[in-house]
Amino acid sequence: MNFKSLRDQIDSMMARDPAARSRLEVVLAYPCFHAVVLHRLAHGAWRRGWRLSARVISHLGRFLTGIEIHPGASIGERLFIDHGMGVVIGETAQVGDDVTLYHDVTLGGVLPSVNSSAQIGVKRHPTLGNGVIVGSGAQILGPVTVGEGARIGANAVVTKDVPEGVTVVGNPARMVVPKDKRESREFLAYGTPRGELVDPFLRAIEDLRGSVTALNERVAELEAQLAEREAEADDGGRPKAASSASS
Ligand SMILES: CC(C)(COP(=O)(O)OP(=O)(O)OC[C@H]1O[C@@H](n2cnc3c(N)ncnc32)[C@H](O)[C@@H]1OP(=O)(O)O)[C@@H](O)C(=O)NCCC(=O)NCCS
Image (cartoon, rainbow, N blue to C red; front, side):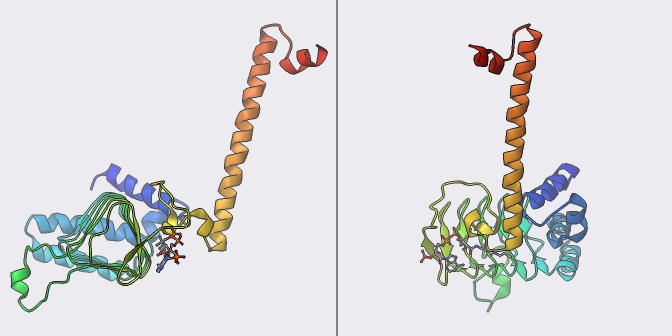
């Protein structure tokens, strides 16, 4: 894991968590950051065949963060696990880039454990495409594929493939059409459109963001008008407003 990858990881977490205030806060106080860094170390050891060291590092990560990622699991760039506690990612799970998981999510296996040695190397955990969002408490079980950009609702139980870009909820998970029928692939905190935010603190932040954007646009507009008038004055002409007033 190089410096750029670490910085991308931190920045992506800040972009996806409305409560994150600084990079230092993410480095010091976000279990996801610690879990991902320790997983990179554990996975490196696992691939070199240092299985016991890998398991010990992974166990340390679990102890510190409450996030259990098997060292054999393949994790893409910029994984964000919000809150973290109770997340389990199994040995043959594959997680794409820019995936978001909330607490208590399981990417688990389903093969019977009667002959566990027969399971070694067998793909028995899910594959998540890029940009997937998995709500808190959701269980995705078995070697299923969740397509790019799909959203899994809180507490859903998924045991079948999920197509790209859709939303599934419930147990067993079924597809639903979100109220806003959004086409946008932008990340939405909690997988939920702005209008559905129920946390008053998040609403206040969103309102402030909106006001700051509107103010910035207004300032840019006024600066452009001012620059135009100064250019006209430099040319020896009179400002447009004055000339139109006299005509
Ligand atoms: C699945 C999810 C992404 C859908 O969000 P959305 O686009 O706003 O969808 P809508 O609210 O329009 O819901 C569409 C339908 O699914 C139902 N639904 C939504 N989430 C559901 C859930 N987790 N379980 C069961 N049903 C759910 C809605 O009631 C609605 O049903 P209806 O059509 O019969 O009225 C969102 O509800 C969700 O579960 N996000 C995860 C949030 C989370 O884990 N937060 C943790 C923060 S700490």
